[in-house]
Each structure stands twice: as C-alpha cells, then as structure tokens.
Amino acid sequence: MTPSPLVQELILAVVKVAVVIGALQGLFSLMTWIERRVLAFMQFRLGPNRTGPFGILQPIADGIKLFFKEELMPAAANKWAFLAAPVVAVTLSFLAVAVLPFGPPFTLPRLQFLPGWLAWLWPEWLHGREFQFQIAAIDVGLLFIFAIGALGVYSVVLAGWAANNKFSLIGGLRSSAQMFSYELALGLSFVGIIMLAGSFQIRDIVAAQAGWFWKWNCFVQLPAFLVYFAAATAEVARTPFDLPEGETELVAGFHTEYSSMRFALLQMAEYVNMITVAVLATNLFLGGWHAGIPGLPSEGLLGFVFWGGKVAFLLFVFIWLRGTLPRFRYDQLMHFGWKVLIPVAAVWILITATGVALAGW
Amino acid sequence: MDAFLFYAAAALAVLSALVVIGQRNPIYSAFALIVTLCSLSVIFGLLGSPFIAALQVIVYAGAIMVLFLFVLMLLNVKREEDAPGRGGRALAGIATALVTLLVAQAGAVLMRAEPGPAPAFDASTRRMAEILFSPHFLYVFEATSILILAALVGSVALAKKDL
Image 1 (cartoon, one colour):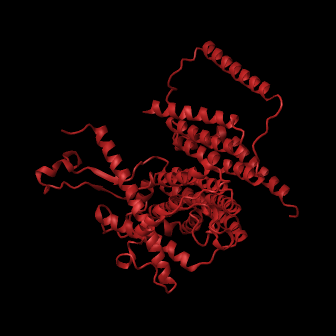
Image 2 (cartoon, rainbow over the protein chains, first blue to last red):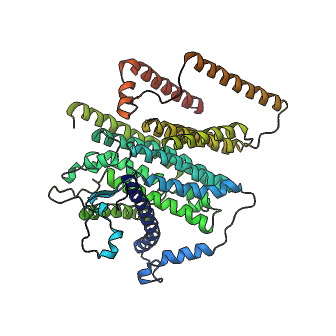
Image 3 (tube, rainbow over the protein chains, first blue to last red):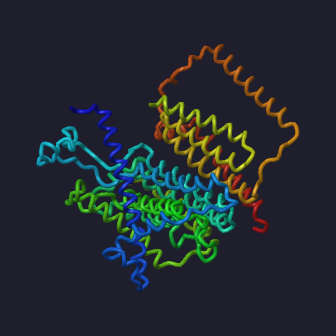
C-alpha cells in the first residue's frame, strides 16, 4: 500500500524536522565540549578530560548538573517575561534553521538487501527519490533568515529587562544596540551575492558557485565575505564582540539571573545561532557542497563530506577567534560597525552592481 | 490550509492589536505590537508576497520596534495611571470604530464589491522591483530616499552639540 503523495511529503517533512533538530541538539552539546577542549589546548591547559574517553561525556555530566540545579527567579522579576525569554530565544534559533540546506541533494538508495520483514521501514516510494535536508525551500530564504535574526534581538532584550537587575538590563541594551548595528552590515554583505546569483534562494546561490574554487563567493566577493564574517560574529555575540556578557564589567550580561535549565536553553540558542551562521557562510560564500575542482563529484555522500568539513572549519575558526582576540571596547565596537563595516559593504555593492551591469560578470 | 492560516493570523493580529491599546503597561503594549506586525507578515505571505512579508518583519517588527522598546526601557516608563474621563474616551473610541465599520460596509454594498479572492496579481520580488523602478514610481521612490537622508542628517545635527 503506497500512501498518497501528500502523506508522503508530510512523512518526509516530519522526518527532516526531527533529524535536523536532533542533529543540532547533538551538535550543540558536542560543541560545548569541543570549545572547552580546543580553548584549553590553545592556553596550554587540558580542559575537561575526566568523563569518558577524552572527556567526551562532559556535556552529559553538564546536562545532569543543570537539571538538578535550583531554578532561581528574582523576586522583583517580571514573571511572564522572565519565563518567555528562553522560550523565544530557542524557538527563533530553530526557526532560522528551517530554510537552510544541510548538505547536497541526493537520491535515496534502494536498499535491496533489507529482509522482507524489515521492508516496511524502507517502502517502495522512497526508492530513488530526490531528497535534501532542507525543511522549507522558500523563495526568499535569505530574507527569512534575516527577518528571524532581526527578531532574535527580542529574546535578549526580554531576558535583560525581565530580570530587573541592572547588569542584566545594561547587558540586554548593549546587546540589542550591537545586534541591530551589525545587522545592517550583515544585510548589506548579502546584496552582492544576491545580484550575482539572481535569487534569494540559498540553493540557487550554492548552484551559482559550481566549478573551480575561485568561483566561490569568498574569493569573488572577498570584501563581502569579510564583512559578513565580522558582522556574523557580532550577531551571535562571540569574542571579540561578546560585550553583551562581558564578564569583567557586567557579571554575565543579560543572563545573569538565569540558572538551571533556563540558562541551558539560552546557551543552546546561542550555540544553535552560531551553527546557523557557520552553515549560512558555507552555503553562501564557501561554495556549499561543491568540491571546488570540477572533476570531483559534489553530490551524494562526498558532497556531505565537503560541506561538513567547511562547516566544521568555520566553527573551529569561531573558537580560534575566542582563544586569540581580546574583547572590543564598546565605543570601538560601535565605531567599527558603523564607520568601517557598513561603508565598506555599501561601496562593495556599488562595485558589484557596476560589474553586473557592465560585464554581466 | 491557507484559510486556516489566514484566520489564525487574522485572529492573532486583532487580539494583539486590542492588547496594544488596552494594556496599561507600555512595554507589554510594545510586545503586543510586535506580535501584530508578525501576524500581518503571515497574511502578506499568504497573499503571495513573501518579499513584503520578510520586509515587514525586518523593518517594522525588527528595527523600528527595537527602538521603541529601547526608549521605554531606558526611560523606565511605569504603568499608566488612571486618567480622569477615561471611560468617556473609551466609549468615544468604540463609537468611532463602529461608525467606520458601518461606513465601510455601506460603501462595499453601494460599490457592489463581492467578498472573495482578489484577482490574480503577481507579487513576486522581481515584479515588485520592476514596478518600483518603472518610470511611474521611480521619481517617488528616489524622492523618498532623499527625504529619509535629510531626516537622517537632521537628527545627527540635532543630537550632536558640536560638529
């Protein structure tokens, strides 16, 4: 019995959502451990190495610890806003993921070797079907991510304001000022790529970078890539732009008053945002799942390897930056955002537009 | 599915708009307005213009409302106190709304506009851009940009004591 096409689509959609969210949560907990280990090695320490081989079970230990901690809420806090902030943060960070393609499109295998009594697990209609880990391939994918990013400010503002703590409030305000300053540069850095690809669809942008690796946008659009990377680092509040939670001056910034699982949720939203930014950079600038050498196949399993490698490299760069660079001062941060990144991005748009108009680039 | 999404978004928009005007705490009002704007964006998306939908969230729900919240939080605005004559004004407001509804309905009956799906309209991003940059609208579009630039320069001049 074959289910109707609508039911087939529905089943596939549910499976995609489950796999993507599950994988992101797994990656989030793994990232917390990797980050601590890599940072430790950069500082000639060992990092967490006691739980399991190389300490890889550390995230589970952390999870158990956070579960058993007391959930604190300041007496003067605004109860509903305080409860809503972590929920908003996590919801938005997973929403943005919905339009990202995770890896190349591929054809589902036939799996003939499955014994008869397991065949229901891999029914006929899956055989040879085109498939891609992208939950929603909407026309304005890039703008959607941008819109969700714009809303992401509110989780921070809400958390900072609701706690009724001056460190939280200053952290929240700083963070929102920083996020919407750098959002402009982030948005401008996309414009050149959109002009070159002629589409807001992330899939089309990846397809436009096929061929030799010097056709990747990180070379063709080098200034845009640099602006994107700086602005994206600021968007997810990573060092050197981690002023919202500058420990030395603000305790822990907007999540000072959060503890236990609510703290874990805020933390998860941050790491998921960081992964989103890395995946987006891979798709937009690093050629997505293309190998960069025309002979090498870029679809199927090999495409996943290239794509995953690029994402992993970018995530490593984020950790690397944190281990290397000191934090900006707040006025320097604003100066850099408004007087360096935005003008560079704007001039680069003019240059790209001229190129597209004159030469068809 | 579309009808269900439309009614859900429309109901949310109306409810949150009521909260915006009914709520005494200005911060709650601001958050309710964000919800209104987001549900309007869902309606734009259902009308076949994802571009406008995204812009609605980016510009209004994202950028402008952050500024509102900023001001409210920095000034630490408290709950609005009961002002005298509040009940009368509420009555006047409801009356105005009813009269507007009546006039709109009367107009619809007179013009014989049948409620139903609008005629097909291409609201894709490409079509939007073509309309915006056609000779018809180009002048208005550029004039608006100049206006915004003038406002920008003016606000910097006002904010900075010594340039």
